[in-house]
Image (cartoon, rainbow, N blue to C red; front, side, top):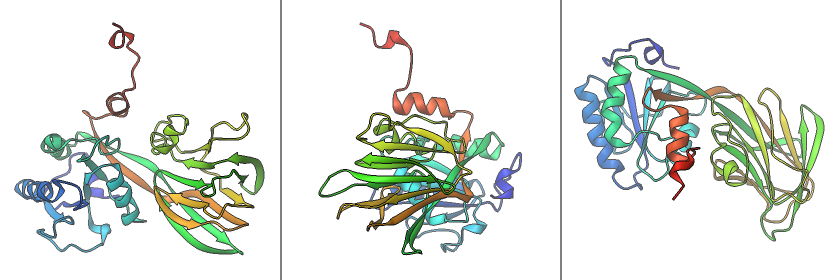
Length: 297
């Protein structure tokens, strides 16, 4: 984590800010150019990894980056987290998409957010990253760093599969159904929530296990500590069964494959200002509220 950004009142002078995003998202290239101009006017050293235009070299060395501004949606932030891998820098997400749960700031609020940063009016919130490895015949054939979730999907021909869960080497239970989601708290409002899993405050250290269409009613979502190691054994996968990490297929599964999930050493770091707290995001992005007057006629 950058020492300059962590300081109580960081000076923009010589701070390196990397602007990233997908060129395929409308307005991202144009917005990145305008943002870099704004950053340079405020004495930041801007590195534009979207358009290729920057005041500094555009390599993939994240160790010297003090702040990453992601233009796009939550998918862009997930890709950026994987791209930074084990050298994580603080991220400020600018929503250029639709929902934008992680990308909390609309483009019009970026100048105010930069002022808050310069004045030290922000906090860095650390979030759980995980490692997912697929073990086949005693060897790791695929591995990935993830932020939201690991999912085992039954796949074609869409018959139910068994997934045996071991916790720290001890057999815990067997899930029978269409698959299983192993989510982080920050991912609890993504696929996990759509599958009926709980919302878990995103800065907690925990994993959420949510079965997909379980055959047994007693297979309910479970929350457990991130300090443990989890192993998912798939004795008889379907021909189309896969392991997916943050929406990207990691590998197809064969009989006897073991999917191992554990907490990663680095943390994903999200920048929050006083105007964008956790519960405001829940209310605005998910329509999470309890005022019955808003729904009454």
